[in-house]
Amino acid sequence: GTTVLVGQPMETLKTLTQVQSTATAASAATGVTNPSLIQTATNLYSTAGIRGFYRGGLPLLLGGGLMRSAQFGVYQSVLPTLEKRYGRTDPK
Image (cartoon, rainbow, N blue to C red; front, side):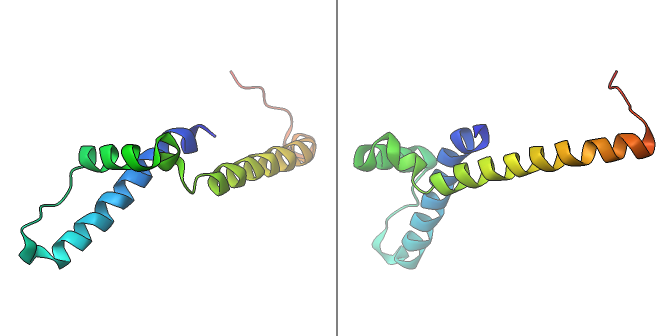
């Protein structure tokens, strides 16, 4: 959850900046410069609003939730077997 909420906007900006840089490099004869991260963020916000920063983040959020649920379920089912085999260890 937190990784998507914090990381998704930065990943979106990075990807858009890279795509724009590639497009600009392809048309270098026009004299257009590569956009900065700030320019990309400003353009994205003005065209798509705050939602634009999180475009494509829902599958990551849902997938992360499913993965954490599976980890918790497996941990809870394996823990008694491990404690029986190796004894209980309490964190200090």
